[in-house]
Length: 296
Image 1 (cartoon, rainbow, N blue to C red):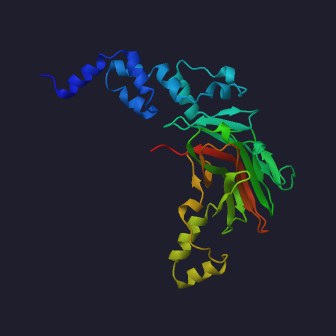
Image 2 (cartoon, rainbow, N blue to C red):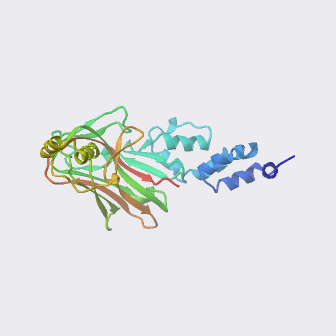
């Protein structure tokens, strides 16, 4: 005896595949993938180009054409192209930017390479050098040797971003025997050029959280006193958002701020400033990432 659920599925299964595909194209990538479990008709519709073409940004082909590897991007379906752009960022604009999609929404995301950023003294070999790393997204990344003035700025046109979308921006970096960042606040800011910037304080010291735990717990009164005697004055309380987090690709990221891309056109600028005069080094900058906030 057929249940109400199987009868409902049977009714849906008589719908033309094109009709099902049209309906699914107004949902989301996760919804389309889940719907493929309903029936064979839904599975075929959910995998169709008619559905996934709607999930790809309208400018997708134009952006792909800006890649030197555009001719080598082979795909058998729009779904395959969508998933490839989610999992494998594409270098564009002479390798100075990378383009990828936020997997749940298909929103456009970018990373600006160090070649696309303004980094003070980047061309002075005693302060910075260009280096290549096997796990880097770009052919070359910027390695900080030693500076007393850290200033990194990046800009991107809001027209390149998905409309009506909340973005988060990040400095993506690694450390290599870093020094001079202990307890030193770094000012980061995000905003439209010519408008008010949203500023906050972060810390690039990757060992900061571990040291704070040791300082707070202590290991007996003498060890604790000795530990405190050789450390910089304790900083104010901080939250996790002010400290770097490890990414899935092995790099670190620190949030610079958020930006809602509405109707106002312009240039979005992001900055990282540490101007306290302390000498610092051992930072490897991969870039600044502008990433659509994951849909919930």
